[in-house]
Image (tube, rainbow, N blue to C red; front, side, top):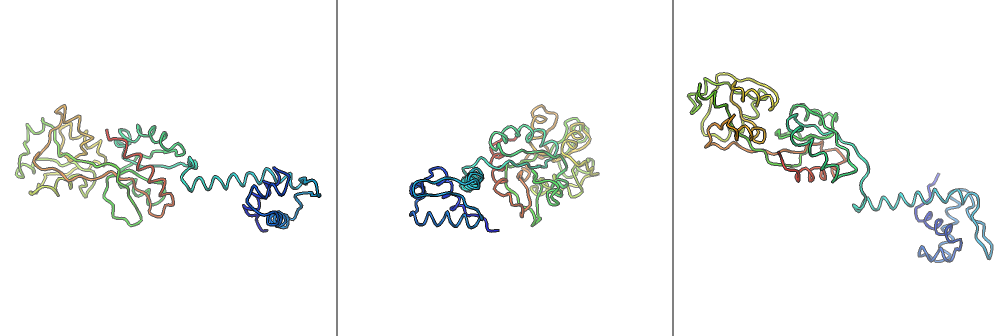
Length: 296
């Protein structure tokens, strides 16, 4: 079955409103002959007469009356398509699951949900909490839609948009340093290094910036930065941690910086999603909004 064209439905709608073919032809910018051809073509496509015409009157048939509300729905939808393509539409309701580390989600993304709702009212964001590798794996496998992480990515399936720069601090508890100083490489074997995983993703930011190497007596892997921070504050090890996570500890002297002349390399929080995800425009808008929400 051939579907009626938008132009034919527009002509029908004008004729149904005005019930005068000449006036309707003028309303849509056609000659009377061209307008009459459009109506005849529509009737042929639908297999039904839509108007009863005499030399003096035009009336809708039963089929024409039934078509009026449906034609107007189609025309309204077509106009909505134009507005959406021009960026004039509020947006189609959409839900996204965004993964994040627990500590970052609690401190930053959960409070940011209100800002996201105000800026992108058509978008509902759900949060999923996990470790860095876990959330990236779930984005890759389409279990969640996107993730906020500072993990370094080398996967061609994934794309990332920068959000905020993340700085790091190499820290320890003062009470630990009173018992076991850590002033140079010779002191390192007496200490426990705390990190998230075997590849030492956090300590790498310090190691790559330093002109010397440190060899620790023991390495303990904890998995999350919140747990790492708790262990270091308790004096059970030393660690490189996100500065935003230990800023208050540094101010209160619960932690102090180690080797303060070495500035660890920085990284970026990124919004990560699959490169083949068709919702790129949504992720662009989401990332832009998140860049305007300061880190705690």
